[in-house]
Length: 68
Image 1: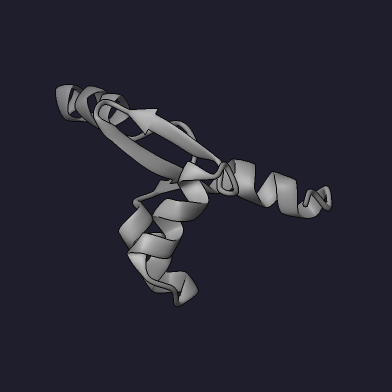
Image 2: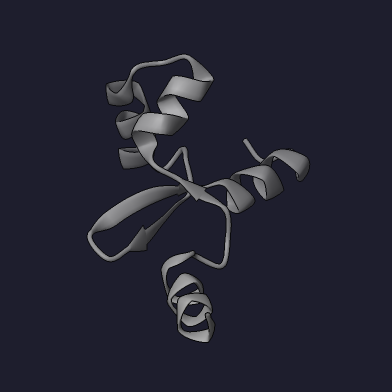
């Protein structure tokens, strides 16, 4: 049980993140649009291994601060 908890803590990122494809699905735009937003710096991301994920915590913080 303890080794499973250790493995889970190593796999789960410390901040809420989401794959770009899933983010696109939830927002209602295409994956290509979300990738363009990421490339232009409109969406904050976090790289975990070889994956670049949308950083939902940073996005929420920016939205609450009124960031453009």
